[in-house]
Image (cartoon, rainbow, N blue to C red):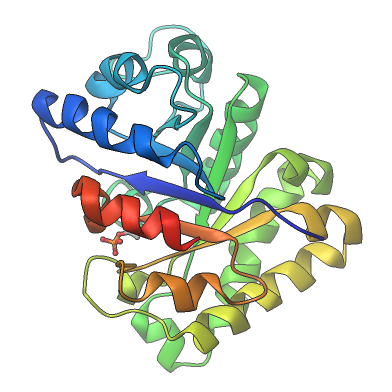
Length: 248
Ligand code: PEP
């Protein structure tokens, strides 16, 4: 099965309006990259980025979505609103939201479904902490995180979804999982999905995230079960991000 790689940049709460135009200009050079490219800026920059990227083919994603569709939920943003703006993807279950905003597996599952119902493709983040890795619990944790979504959404929902394996100890730390460590977890994740439906498992894109840079991207992306990356810090530099996209 050949899967088109996906490289998605997660700006987190970084950037200013002037970065939008600069990025738009340099990413238009990625038109011929083998990978699909997506950028997930903070909410206020979604619409300007859609305009700046024009017909470059670069996709837009959001970093969060409400579990609700409409109503009295001050400060929330719905999947339909994001789709209206031109978003294709939304990140759900990022470890920062799990750790800092108390998002548990149940809420992540709800957001995943809501995203799909609103016309978006969720990028579901899973990953173990350092303590969990040292306790030998990595596989158990990531399979539990995927299963908690599987239980509410069912395997069919993974046909319109992306999973990102992001070991928490590698996010923003400069520590990267080795290509072998990452591949081992990706293979386990694909096997867990294959146990439900082999063809969905063979089609789904599994991204690696955690201190991916232009100098380690190619080796990570060369692993058989790694289909691109979710890129944090390095996505803030247009040159660095472009180089990572071209490595996929
Ligand atoms: C992330 O936050 O999704 C991420 C992968 O960050 P970084 O690349 O900075 O480790």
